[in-house]
Image 1 (cartoon, rainbow, N blue to C red):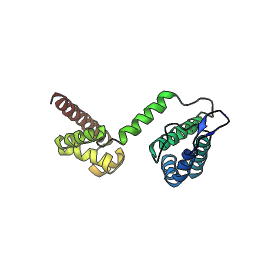
Image 2 (cartoon, rainbow, N blue to C red):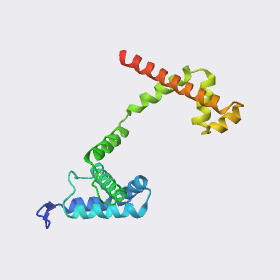
Image 3 (cartoon, rainbow, N blue to C red):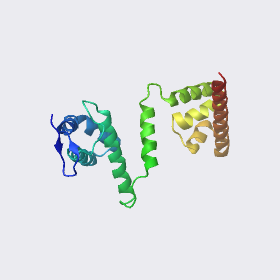
Image 4 (cartoon, helix red, strand yellow):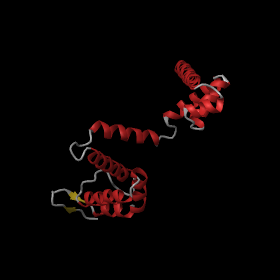
Length: 184
């Protein structure tokens, strides 16, 4: 395929624009899942098409979807940040970098939080049953303190104290588990 010159003097490839157009359903589905707004997803998709036609999308070649998704995420973040600051401030570079790092961590085969989840499960098993029960009521059943007090037949202050003990015990067990993991 031959490349054409854009008005900015950049060399553009019609192949990039065709690729962005070809992945429209997947890209819109991704943007809607990210933004929860179809009209906003359409806006960002149109922006990507314009950027592709002007040669502003870099790193896109062949049939790879990853670079297009990264460009879509960056544009979505910029749009949301502009909307939340009334267009006064551009998104800080470190925010974009942190979000990209988080996205990369989520796509790793064994994300780092899986180890944390296992340590948390182990710590829960080591807690006394009364403390496990109060954590289950609070976080498993999503009861508020007053509901927990009514269900357990206890004073609200006692429930709060037991919940604090459970959290502290859990935190202590997780720290011990982390320390054991670092020494092995």
